[in-house]
Image (cartoon, rainbow, N blue to C red; front, side, top):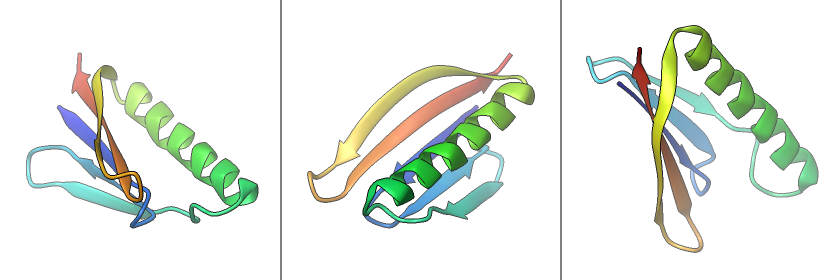
Length: 78
């Protein structure tokens, strides 16, 4: 199982594989349309890579506050 966690307040995304491996990618930022577009493209590439590695999205949920929302996408390898 892989957990992808995005924290807009911290401007980064974490990918945890649950076996002691965790990746961290810094996002461009959260202010302005240009940053949002770049972040969306970066996240799309990350999700596409997980799909290519045989993972499937099985759950999503959001946490945090209105100022620092966080989203989690849970993937499981088929």
